[in-house]
Length: 511
Image (cartoon, rainbow, N blue to C red):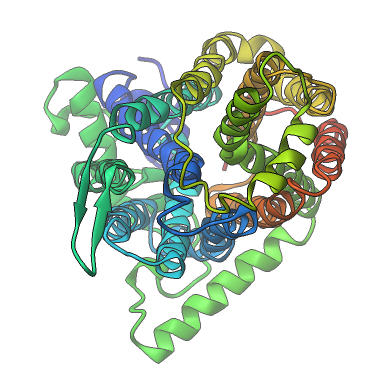
């Protein structure tokens, strides 16, 4: 291969990663990163089926459901920046493993709690953990890719999110309707508890699998750990080519001046002095994001994440609840048509006789409709990586935001469950695509030492939007549902306008 190595014999990252080839290692890395993203799709939307299934056992009205859906979002708000700071100072891999194992363990524990507030608290910690995995899997995957493949590989991640959205209703449909009940005087375990437990297991398995993967070589180079980075390149080369690692053509890497005396990876968090240095590193990176030349991109990406994520996660979590309400409406008003807002306002009257939905079962059509929503994401997930190089991630982001904003307005005008389903499918397909595109763009907008921090900061703003959105939706769905519809559609239109100001990505080599 004809690569231009530098005069001193060292190779920069782009040369070093290109010499490793592209093969088995990259496909395995895409698989584990994709499964992490798929698992986060399950983790953040699992409550969409817990809400109607556990309403009676946990004694939840609409406001309580709003608090429950907001709890993991609050955890995400707090966890996003914390995990991002640790990933940019201690490493991508260690934080990914920690967050996944924490999410799995807390998820299993939440299966056995008996009280609403205990379950809410544990779902907070689920959100706190899973947001770290979500924010870091894109930079981790992207930092192993040559520039010419990076944007395309990252766009394939959307297919895994879609798989998560498709798999979740299938798991729920297979478990929640089962007649599983174990009851004593102080303990009750039902099918929805089993559903929560099974959804927690993938986090544990993926977290353990990640031990077999190396740390990001781009991050190691940034920390000045050139020997470790070279060993990672040799490992990738051996996996891709089947050759001995020692035959890897690059023998040394281009060293950059390191401004800090001690690599942040070597800091010990239990030592006050090292902790002070770590906080100083985090503060310096935060200030860098809030100053030129990164300030503009930081503000735009945070604003887009706030508006897009608040709209997506709020409506996605509440879709099964809305489908359930349509089913109940048709049972009492056969042959009549009504909008989402009318159906929801009638729900408030039914709470007088059955405030917690103890006499309500989730109809099979609810699972089926949610499955249709997931399947609707497949075309976009396949088209995106095939055409992203021709049209650019920015084009797809703007288009998805504009159309999804119009679809959100359409929810006010639907008059039956079928129309509601069609709009829900379009909304889910476009907004989930938009969220993946934002992650892809952020990887290219910021350098290695700020990349995860930037993703974490924008993710924090997105989760703050989700938190506010779920609280607003839970409170207003029975009272004035037109307000959240106008609010979320407005958010999406504003995000589409802001996207015009993002630079084009995927063409230049990054630092």
